[in-house]
Image 1 (tube, rainbow, N blue to C red):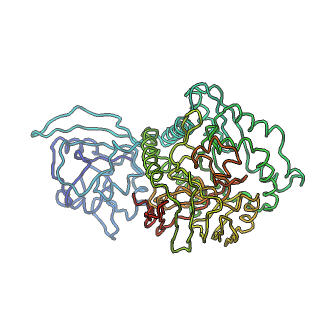
Image 2: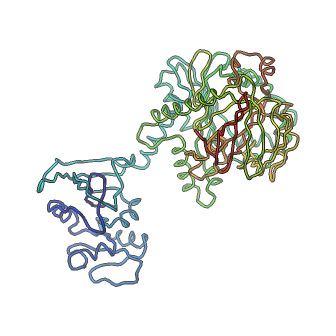
Image 3: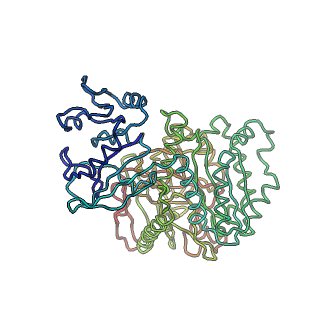
Length: 573
């Protein structure tokens, strides 16, 4: 289906239902294209035709909600009815007005545009196809003049949907490689991916080699097989980790490899697995992968995490849609979250975003807060004391050699580490948490001297308590992260059921391990020195969201000055 329209330089098409500028050449252009074709037109627009009658020499389809019979026209009372009528003809043009253009825009694959080099007042507009990455100007004629007014004829075509998706996927892969892990020539990259995500993982592999990777090593996983292992494997295997798995992860980390993980899957894949079996496996892997995990937590290796949708995840996020539609909608949400529009400028957007985060980091570090006081109507009333030499971080991190990378794609957070024994009060989760393939909702913690002494949840409480029992450090806090409520992810008003996204929609805390970079000199400290500096250590690290629209955070400096950091869920600076 096509449309034909005259637009001004700001893509305006009219004011008060009329065209401020009318060109004879444009009228002739319109007659030539639409002669003998079907035209879809709104009732009000038709009434502005000469005599208020349908156009001669065309098959008029008039769109109206009124129960009318119009001589010389077929009447459609819905979009579907108009499309059905248009299907009878070899060629059909949508010709207006503005509401009809909007109504049928999703069905257009070609638009004939007359560009008029003027900007009169307009109150109705056609979509700016020059700014829409899904459209391309396939042909543009020479600029002409009529009565001193410049104009030209253009043909725009919608890009093939599959091609547009492929371009966005390739841009996403480049983003993860060039900005996420910031791969440099001659480096080795390990890509961890579920087998369901193999096509995208291979795009990342291709992008890495294009960036100069020495080698790309694929580390495949299969969550369905993992589920079966948890359910049915011999009991003693839950306490064991194969030697080759230890050698793989710990060995590549020791050799200085970069690690890119592609997250995906069903948020509740392990909901029917005994939490005790999950806990035993988690403890075994925590101990076996300690060298690997410690190196990544201390930023000795470059690492980054991205995510791509699969149908099971999409249907959880959009339960009212069928699988295909839900998947398309979740892809759109993911692309928005990582600033991909198809225009090819995501890398530049991320560099500007990182600069903004770094500016806020510098501001927070200059204040040297002694504590933060969180309060909201949900029930959170929590004081978080900070280590004396704490540091805020956000945007990118850096290895000891100075290679910068962004660990989470997307990221909106600025974070630091709480003082291990310095958290007191009550904190309530503002969003559900996906934990070990289970959904945990309505979390409420009571905290004394840094330790979670009461843990409650409206659902998934057994899973939550199992994670808190991983080790002694699991009941203390390792991260306090600030994220504005008015963020690109939160503004989509989607619960992703994935911590990578949901934690960047709201302020969050994490129980478990702290990041060594959150204390001055921490990346060069031993475990004992980090503990002495006030940081928590654990084999787990679980983020849960606490940010709400009414969240208030007051920072207190070393000399007792109180500074509002957050008001009504957002930064005050």
